[in-house]
Length: 102
Image (cartoon, rainbow, N blue to C red):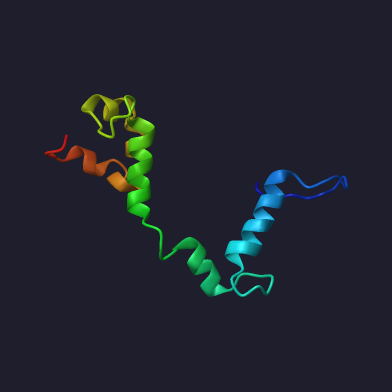
C-alpha cells in the first residue's frame, strides 16, 4: 500500500520525496542504490535503538491523561486495548500477573 506509481506524470507527493531522502541519507549506507543484507539488518534492528524503552515511552505517552509521567490503574484500564496489543506486555499476558507497581 506504500507504493507510488506516477501514472499521471505529476509531481511526487511529499511522502515519496521524504522516503527517497530517508533511503539516500540513512538506509543506503554504502550508497550503491540498493539495500544489502547488512543495511536491512541495521534498518530493522538498529544498534542504537532500545525497542523496549521506546514502547514503554509510547504506552505512557498515550495513556497518561494527566501527564504526570505515572500511570494509574484507571489510566491503564481506560487504555487496555493499547496495552494488550503491546509487545511490552507480552500482548496482555503480563497484565494478568500480580505486580507491585499496579
